[in-house]
Length: 304
Image 1: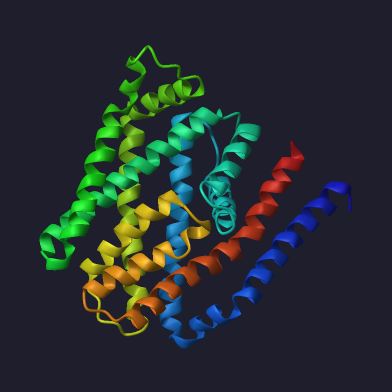
Image 2 (image 1 turned 45 degrees about the vertical axis):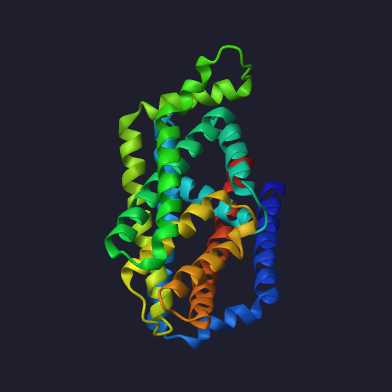
């Protein structure tokens, strides 16, 4: 076995060991999955895999704007590597890994990556807040007025920024430096209507799948939750998840699930279990895909 193969094998084993250590440190949490039916585990696992596929597809759509012929499998693996990093690193840790990889092997400028991810996140903000307002306005639940107001402010702000943010360069007295390159890239993507439409459709699909995941997590414990409440929770968890203020958005996502479910008459204990189960399934599949994804990506690095 040559040096390259030895390094790749050791790298694979290292990531596998890290995943095992993560499991051992959170063994009590993983026991939760043994308390629900096999059918519920299968449903939640299928949904979790669909969500991961959506994130891989988002990256492929963004790279397609730059005419980079990157296969979907590579985009998926890079997305999984980023998600694995986000379990440990706050505020864009996974994004940094993707940016460095794409720069090295596909010559994608950092400004292009930052701008493209910025546009994708803004579209997700717009789509999720739009659906949140639509659902909250339709259901008319008395405790949802604050959530409607929050969604409305975010929707108006992000939509305005999407269409007007590039105009900041008109202020000639300001020195932009690298920010100027990012703004130029932003404008280029914003004018690519095909990419914008694809990202909008994908964000809608991701929202629907995430709503189904929330619903299935509660139903796994026989909690009486409506699809509208599940969709509202999904919208706000996805909004905060894009900020990634702490590793894996740990605690923030759970607090939102428990709080919104509580205003709709669902007990805290049910909310805690559903939130923990949803996160647990996503973590399991992240840990499952991470060793293989990082192994393949490391082999690509060694071959170049």
